[in-house]
Length: 253
Image 1 (cartoon, one colour):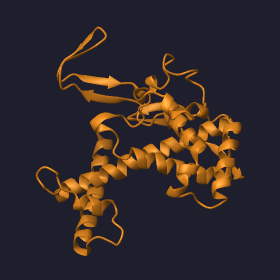
Image 2: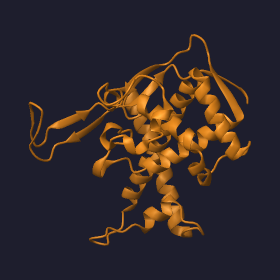
Image 3: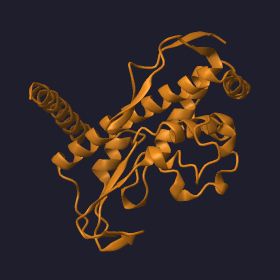
């Protein structure tokens, strides 16, 4: 299809850019503070001691770049959308952010003191998980209720439905960040925005930290309100995207 051909050209350009970056780093060596590329270049298989080839390095770097930007952006878009419709939640999160930050940008060291902002992010991830479904290939026979699962079967996990299941959540369709005040009271497998098990999102901790840092910085500086007539519909296109975008008015706080 024409779109696939265009995407292939774009992918070739991204691969070439990564190949050039890897070659430059091999030539110059690591910096004073190791970054992601340095860590990947220095990685060794614990059993065989094998290093990654340049092709493997390239694909890992592209995975981090491609998978790591849209999902966090979607989380922030949905979080701001939800805050725009609940000014009480937004004001509470803003007060916390301003008390910690003033008007400076947040950093990683601020995250432990931004507990309520984190609760807003987690509630946004529950209501609008960027990865709205997961799939796994069964390795062994199993049974799920009356269904027999055979090796090789694909099992689909509807994360969006799981996060709004009425037997798992009180008032599941409501935006209530306070439900995350007692994180230990929420079962591990009823909240899967990053998946779980051996294939859990490799950037889960970083993504959550990044979202808290950016959201706190924005809320400390701006007040967000919804634009009438621009309510987005969640559409599943691999990720859960707001159809038409999230339209908000931002005014200085």
